[in-house]
Length: 450
Image 1: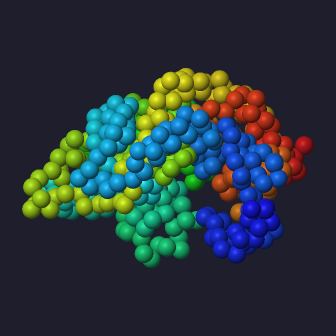
Image 2: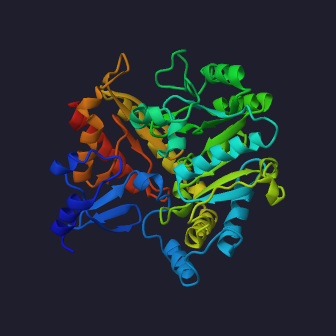
Image 3: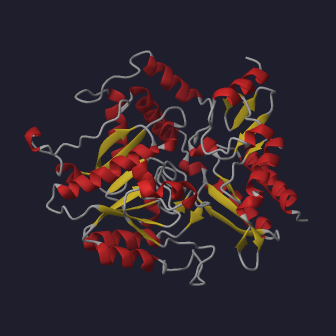
């Protein structure tokens, strides 16, 4: 199909996610025809370094030979079958591998098919556990400001980004929200690398006051993604774990974006040396090949549902594609690649490369902060550096950087006026340098800096 026909049909029939469709009239969608390693190629032969892992999923790059083989091998056996009362080798292999790698005593795996669905399942799991454990008063959840946990109604109810949730507020579930950490604009005047998470007092106050009503606290460990890659210290998670233990509230970790090596360790909770009661995983789990998500939990929570059928204690939550063999086979191979190719061990030089650019970015008059956690880095552009005053969102500085970066061969989709980097973990240092140089040049061009 010719490029012009692809674009014509797209504009006639496609409604793109998280997109103001009118933008596409002046900046039409780019038809991608193939991927190779860290690059995507369009219909004109132009290549783009995928600086955001195509919404944070392609952690092992595009067109990975080992993942291709795993997908083809499983497709030749069985692509899908009902998972209620049936099982298969890829699912049990994946579950056992995840439980071996996961922090703490997470030993049970529930399969869903995307991140939002995993969050929905986790919330229902926590709620139902308390209902069946003599605590019917525990019906509400706590989240923090600027949190993002998905866009289905339950997941959106525990999110804190007004951009996504404000218009839907009349139909959202009632819960509690506490002020979350904002280390760049810390009201205590502290630094994230040396503080004791004094800002935890806000969450502590809400949970302590309402714990009789609270089933669980859900949080994105270490990095609040959609908030602009807000990074906060591990001690915050340590305090949360201690508090949840004290007042008998579930700690639900949404590691959908930060799991599978993104923070430099397999799971973000490892930085704090703690484990959640429930953990949600998706995105990088299949290397970006197939939709798949899982919820890990403990034997204790699992036993709260284990009984004769007549008791109706079963977790009656289902997905048609639950435990899909193709997705599971890919996820197994992803974990094997992590081990065989020592993916985590390869990251420190790349993380140091990010850090080497920090001073250079922060020297620019309209860059407020360069921050990094593992293989996640972000540049926050500001109108006033002295006052840490954000650009008016209508100026769309981040979107301008995105457009200019594409012309230079880099995909850097922003979060408002935050230009972030979340490249495939397998990116080479030459490509990473090109990505950083491109972002730097485009930020200078957009903000008029010299």
